[in-house]
Amino acid sequence: MENDSIDNGQSLMSRLFFGSRFNYNRKDFFSEVRGVEISKKDFDEYARPIIYGEVSNRQSEKKELESRVILNTAINRMTENQNRKKKTSLKDILTQKGQYQAYEGEQYNLYKGQDKNVLDEEKKVEINQILDNIYGEMSKGQFKDNTNNAFFYQHNEDGSITYDDTKPFYK
Image 1: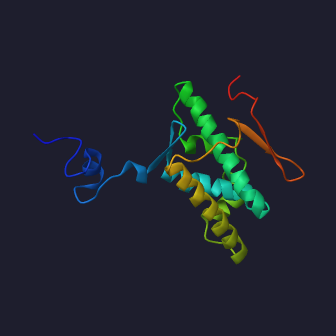
Image 2 (image 1 turned 60 degrees about the vertical axis):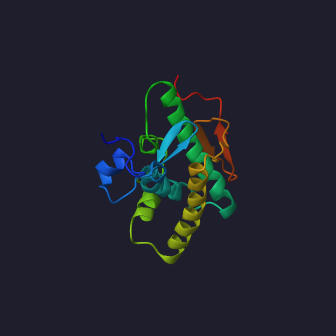
Image 3 (image 1 turned 180 degrees about the vertical axis):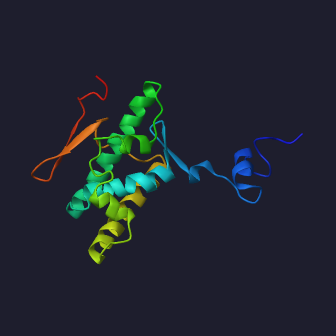
């Protein structure tokens, strides 16, 4: 009888979704961060343009910090939902109305569109490099929470970022 989980190193899921010629490796599509799964698709299609929209006008040294804060607040919300038996994806959290203001905004759409000038493209390359490094950390289980488990953050007039690690996600 055929083993349903492994066939010459290939999983049943791989055979079903990709046929017998391709190997399916879950790590190629998901990273686990603090007990929640981050899909590569959600990261690329939602986190990248939202973070571009949120941080593209920041000074270079602030872009990575804020990118990490945004992703950590989203992951912390996912974890809190999971603890309450409500599974949510990164997409669900990032696209929730009124939570991340860049979603579907001008910079978000600029990132996703083709009408970028050279400066926009330079910003995109810089931010993508930051996000490639962060996703690499996620894939290796090395992405650290720089918010002390906060669900919310804000920009201050002086350019600094404040996160609120006391405000509950649910009241």
